[in-house]
Amino acid sequence: MPKALPVTHTEDFHQRAGAVLGAALERAAAAVAAGDFAQAATAAQQLAQYGEHVQTAVVRDALAAGADWWQLGEHLGLHPQAAYEQHRGAAEGLRPPALQRQQLAVVCTAGLLTEHDQDTEHGIDLDDLGDDHSLTQDPTVARIRAAAELLDEDAWIAVRLPGDYEGDDDLDDGTAIRRWRTVVAHPDELGWLREALQHLAGDDPDDEDDLEPL
Image (tube, rainbow, N blue to C red; front, side):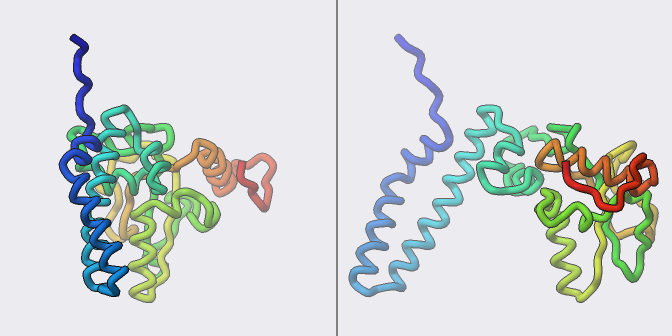
């Protein structure tokens, strides 16, 4: 007798909630037809809640199938670190992106312009890497920028290669507000970063004034 294939998380959810989802969609359609938009909105909210459960089930199945945070991020439209922070509880023993693909790891340091010196040892200014660089979508970058804007402060964020970085403990008091490890989404972005860091350190043999992405 053929061995039965294991039921996926997505199929299990479908079996348990498929009828409920169909009924909620029917209620929404009927309520709109009757002009009862309050009832339709209630049904829509229920569908949205179930939609989140569906996404979690799909993520769990993708992880079980061997997907990493880059693949999940691409599927979900998220930076790999953002995908990890949103779904790291989907299964046990999940490694963060910087440990999954250590060759794509970088270290970011953030400070306030009025309180912290942006020393070259922190790396290249993130703004110099361009608005389309994947690090602009890193969740910690987004949180720091949003907080700075809310407080009407100017914040800087610098990027460098990991080196011997071991965590926030290597950040001296008063040096900056935060240091963390994250990743770039694309390998070619590291080539750009290395070139920019060489230029910053004065090691660029061509001593170009303008750097072009690789």
